[in-house]
Image 1 (cartoon, rainbow, N blue to C red):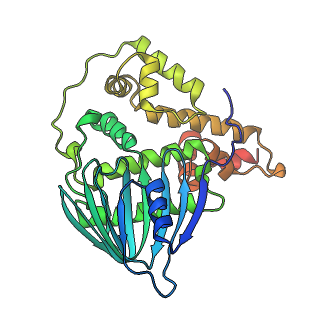
Image 2 (cartoon, rainbow, N blue to C red; image 1 turned 90 degrees about the vertical axis):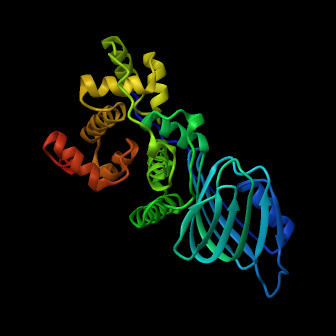
Image 3 (cartoon, rainbow, N blue to C red; image 1 turned 60 degrees about the vertical axis):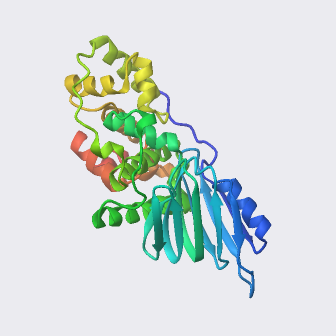
Length: 328
């Protein structure tokens, strides 16, 4: 079984600061969406600044501006841009309704519909998630075809989900902005993107919440499961997607999930976590703490971002803590 190799930093960072409306408009166009912006008179050292943190699967930014501006996005957003407002306000209008977000509020820009917005001295953290990522998770988890995924509102369904999403934004943006970001690991970045996509489908009103129960897809042949298991075993060091595992097994995502639950008592991703846990155990057995090998580094290598949760899962599986295995 191959061991993950050290890769160049996955998180790409940049900073931008300007008081020039043309430069700011160009930045917004490059980072978010093409559109038109109108700026209030820029006086007294007012500026627009942003720190961006990108990976191929998820990104986070901190945007601050003391320049008020408004704009239009005629063609709408192609990807999801969620935001948490720390100060100031932003008003977003579209065919789906108007949203006024001020300090402490969370929301996102609606997709594929004309948008108008207006900002006032705002300070926000944004999460950017590819639209296909959320559509894929909706199809995998709820059986909703990607083309049928629709969000009916841009604010959380309840106060508790509002608090949950705020906490998640803090967790994800903090991980991306950390100088030694754990999301430089492709496995952790993939897991985080899946977590955010799943959370978005539980936080904001959408078509998966009203999906009617679907009957099981029928029997999954043992040979199909063997192909899926073999693919997972051979590629556990890579950021695997459910759709990729299903394709390797020659079946649909839904049938694959049904077969794993029916015959193995777990999900494909649950089985993948078991495999990665065993591979982490093998690395711990080979590791040498005198060389600087640590439990946290080995856990992160195999996609376990939280050392505490890793230790709990490890002890449940093997009866000892990972540190005991490391020390031999």
